[in-house]
Length: 131
Image (cartoon, rainbow, N blue to C red):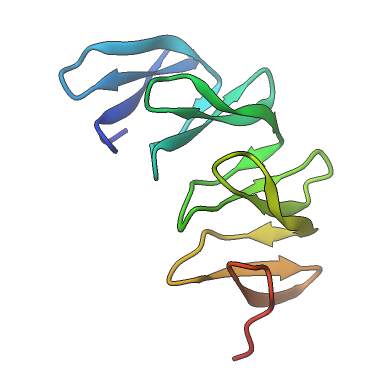
């Protein structure tokens, strides 16, 4: 994986860890899955659940999600145990309820989501954006 925000996820066997830009091991491979850093946080999977770590490799948001996307514009799409998607802020607080069957990352203040079989766009407050 490429470096992002000075760190890179690396795989050893079937586990993931992180290296800094000098090649120093920041954490031994302990994660089942590991994403690149965005806005200071990275989604990682441990024991079947996703959470987020900060650049010091400390847990910033507990491992309580079935899936997790990357942070963009201060929010990350995450799925609960029922595979419903919503959005959390960098404190792990749900700011857009788990109401979607699909949720993309935000770009220029909007994100593509799916509710049932209907694709739509929402703003950072969760309100539908009319085309």
